Length: 273
Figure 1 (cartoon, helix red, strand yellow):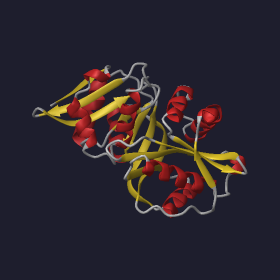
Figure 2 (cartoon, rainbow, N blue to C red):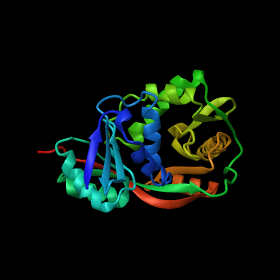
Figure 3 (tube, rainbow, N blue to C red):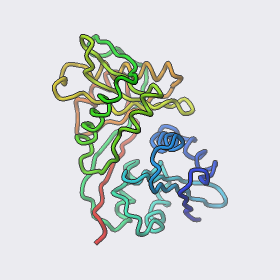
């Protein structure tokens, strides 16, 4: 039983990705990150790992600095060996299913300095938004605005985590048709992204409304719009994450038909002394 690692996407075994694909709900983030890596994003010092036992892959993980270590829904008995094998690799933290992230943080020997508690939701039947409003797929002319909003979103949602500038990812995702804008009188007032379907799975996010446009229902409009566009792109399994510290967003998504699946966490870890 052993963890193996590579810095090359070409060397990541098909069996490891197949392990992730066996549960596209709980492994949604690793699957979408892998897809973006194939488009040339996250090229600086990536690490891909897989755990084998009896000749079979039982777990997989990714690390794309400066983002936290990213865990799939890996078996709990593989977490401590992963922490030991990573040794001195100084990830800023760990992100994934709650039990696995807590187990990794404990096994790492590093103090927890911050935590974002999240809940994964899955769409049942999509219901109408809380208000009427127009939503459209973003185009090239919107890249600058969405990039600025993405910077604001990251600074607000994950201030304790270092991030690369999002410009390259925004440009790529807009080119893929993965952003939707809500408009009022022809002016963008909120944005929502979604991931292109992978085996029928798509994840909504990020969802962001600038402070001056909040509490008017635009988040509901743009999330509904992104959900419809993702369905039209072939998604029959729609997911999204919420910050449990934000009861408003949780209620908005549930009103649209999203139902709780499991709890996740992003845990920031102190540097080794």
